[in-house]
Image 1 (cartoon, rainbow, N blue to C red):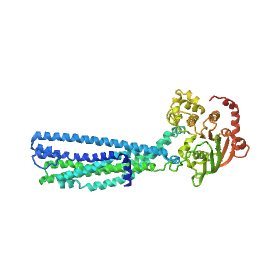
Image 2: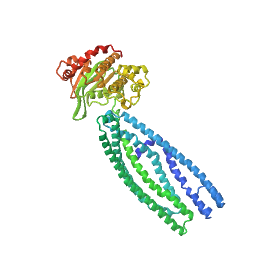
Image 3: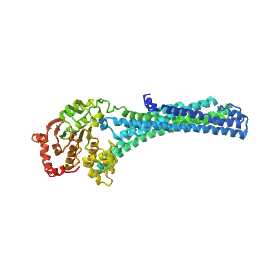
Image 4: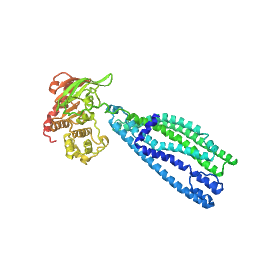
Length: 606
């Protein structure tokens, strides 16, 4: 019952349309149940002259009882045409409202799923299977909306057909009706068994299909890596293995379905034979007329074939339950804003970490008692070995994750007490591998402020040292970058992302190794332009480049999740430790190079 309630929850907003659809699903077979009686009227009264009770709810037919031959047939046929025309209007309305219900439900489901996925936490997305999410947002939604808008009304229609068919056939002859329904218990039990089988098997098929979809999605996104490492054959074999598993699961499902449908057809045909034999026997006994036999055979279609069709709908019902469960698994996942703050203080850039700890698991601390303070307007460099916790600091500051112990203060306010959206509106993050949309360069820069003035976009591009590169393209700022910015180099993508962030004019900007693909000269130009543009900007630069760190007002050295050193370049380069070791290895080489170019950079027009 819970599964059924969950399915019907999608119809709450559209209850009136659903009511109309279900009403028409009942009314249509009700009106059809009288169609065979027209044939009975022709056979019994017009052709054979029997004055039997036909049962048609049309008083006009009584007027034609006195008519004979062709004239009577013509008049009855005319009424039948009018009656069928009215039925066609009902069927049109049924199809119209079904289509409307289908699209309204799928629209709501897509929007709710998309909005919820947007609000899910960073930790959820870092573990989520992209291909599986795509499947839940597409084929699973289609399965659910198709059942609610099509199979559910069809199920009601089948029940109504059976009820009205049995009623009309019972009025003709109860024995004939009972003979037609003799195999009904067998069909019902087999349909219930088939439903249980479908529910179990379709869940397995969904899982296999999601894995196959993931392989496709990963391969398309990583095609450059595949080409670079010449792993096409390996990727094809991996996909082929999953595709075979998907094929084999469907083959097993189809084999069982074929047996079920074969037996259903056999059962339906046996019911026809039983009904026909019974009708002939009753006719020979004089209990039934020729019209009764003809109409009785017509009513078999309202009793036997709907039960067969019920098996298909039950199959779709099982699929819809599984698909809806998969959708609800996402929708019932707590969003990123469940544990959110309420404050929106002014943020100027003062940041303080007080004994901050963070770990993915109980025994794996990424940060273990980190403490430091950053003043507004400072440029701070975070350096350390891979895995030291530098990117974790960036994630904590933007509240993509929250510390497990300790405190992070923004202008003296605990960051956990501040709304996450407010934090992200004031603290920008530029990643090492930025995501660019398959749009123009201009659109990618202005995406966070689409209505911003054009000169501000150009100015942000100049500060990010990407303006000259853009103007070399044939279409300039209207150049399409391709999916994920594939047409741009790594350094160009990083600079477009920097320009995008600068357009927002946030008081704090974190560069998470986002200058790594930029040459030393451009690196220096960008940093000086940033300082010139906004002397109050608090910059946190996560870098492996020692010359970048050297220019910072404060250098924080992380080692194994702890702050091992903190100070200026002049201070740290003279003290034994990780910073001095890095400076001795790479610093002197780059220092000699920078000596030759530094003067030129200072005079550059940005």
